[in-house]
Image (cartoon, rainbow, N blue to C red; front, side):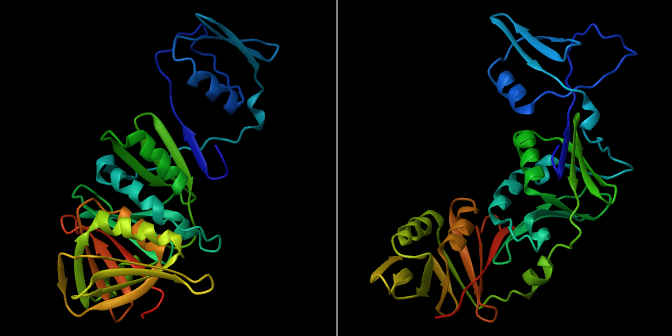
Length: 323
């Protein structure tokens, strides 16, 4: 438990001499306990003594430490009422890619979260730092109730570590203060954010494509990595004669780098823009390998990038200015 997350799990296959009608709790230093069990994957016998010592016995030896009473530990919170039920396979893998776009603005706590927007026909996984907007829409026809859920990056990371390689039904509910994620024997509670999540659907619907170019994802990543030699701001120019030209310039230190790469197809007029290198680089990296389509909106000075085989996963980037 910390100031935002509470995690509980059950351990089975335990033999004990404690009578069934007797229950007690104790606290043990978490760092010590975790470190011990990481290095001792075997049967352990645990003795809890009245002198506040705890002894872990195993084949090769023993380890002793101390325990304290649980009076100072906060109460656990448990889910109340019915929630929605979704399968982890419908969003867990996409959620990992959304981590790179979570904001860090203390005055906008909503953007420090990952949004699961559950609709009757689909689930949107959304994250944004107000410059980049990541969206992955998954078809989903089993949601009984529509609900928007904001998860902290910590809670989302715990979910991913547990469920990245399995398909499990997750119950998601709230008591108005916390969001509860329940699966198997695990309960994770995450403090709710009082702010509303930005209206990402409005931004997506307002985007109007004026040009579009298709290129190889890995080739652009290689070109962008070269820009590190100069500055974090890059200029991107797309034209039929030179392909895609990426340039970065540092006037004060008289540094300049420029690289060009071919594209596979261009639709509409040529275009150019400036953007933070890390913003566009992280956006391209989040897309599945293969071809990438970059749509340019001349009206809103934004780019939209996606793999044409997976159009439901895309990233919107706000550019700095038009050259």
